[in-house]
Amino acid sequence: STGVELEISDFQNSWKDGKALVHFVSKFTTDMDLAVLSSDDPIKLLGAALDTAESSLGVPKLLSPSDIHQDPDEKTIILYLSCFSKFHDKLVNVTEEHKIETEFEKLKKENSS
Image 1: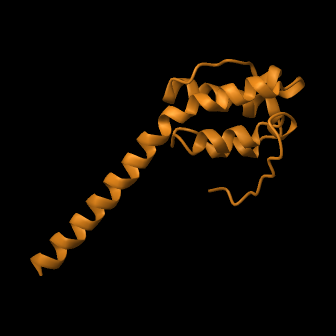
Image 2: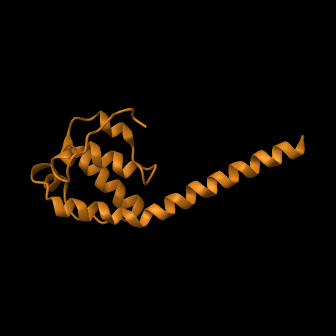
Image 3: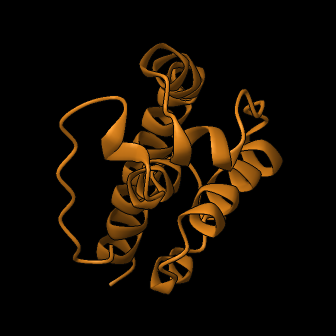
């Protein structure tokens, strides 16, 4: 977590600077390097998020960084973000598996003492 609070109030201007997209992608893959947030270049941020989503998750680039930065289309951004929905179940399953493994390790330690 970066400790940065973002206000996202729409599917247009809230996404222009790239920060919201970087944070959004980081929720689906640890491959999203949050160090990129030190940049003030929205094209760099948007490009990094789009590239990571495509390479790590297989989410197709439906738009370019300049499309989002210059004239974000609400419906296109919603469509792009909806492409991530198929990863939600996978994230939930990974989290549940981790919880089960953690509980199993705890029980093993307790029983071996």
